[in-house]
Length: 220
Ligand SMILES: [Fe+2]
Ligand SMILES: [Fe+2]
Image 1 (cartoon, rainbow, N blue to C red):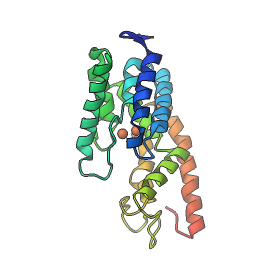
Image 2 (image 1 turned 30 degrees about the horizontal axis):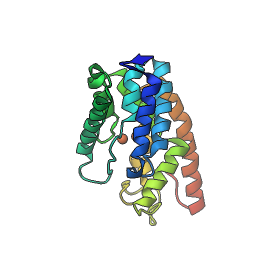
Image 3 (image 1 turned 30 degrees about the vertical axis):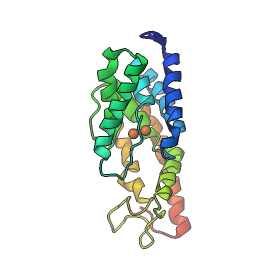
Image 4 (image 1 turned 60 degrees about the vertical axis):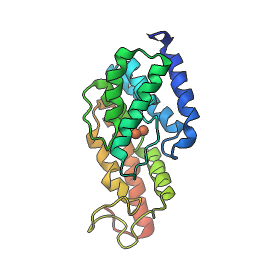
């Protein structure tokens, strides 16, 4: 498939090489392996749903072209800065500009904190693919990696599971499951992503249940 002057596979290489060169700047949950997994998932979803690959591919591969500090106050703005950077890159590589508006929307809408409803199938696919990577075994691993890096404890020592207290993921890692992760499946758009999310949630439930048993905590 030709997009502008190049085949889609050639574009994929250009995007990959760029993100690989930026890898040092990203936290352990957003390194090139995240980009690769989300890209593979998005391409699968796109095929099943009939989304346009020439929009999905650049959007998904450059969906975080600049690192976003999740706990910085400027998170909301940083997705706009990152998206602008992605479009500038595409422009510099000569990607067809008539696709930019759709790509821009798909990148902006992937962001959880931006809270933008995806209006196109392509934006839905990119958002779903990115959110799936926060679920399942990989979701658990990424959550632990980021949480420990921030110096947070695994759980609240007085009440490990947020049963009689509000969940607060700035205070401990486990609460991130309740603040965000377990809520993601309800926010997915495509049928294929919802099915995959079911399997991934089961993995997370086993983890949480076993964790509760091992630390002798009441399970939520
Ligand atoms: Fe992101
Ligand atoms: Fe992402």
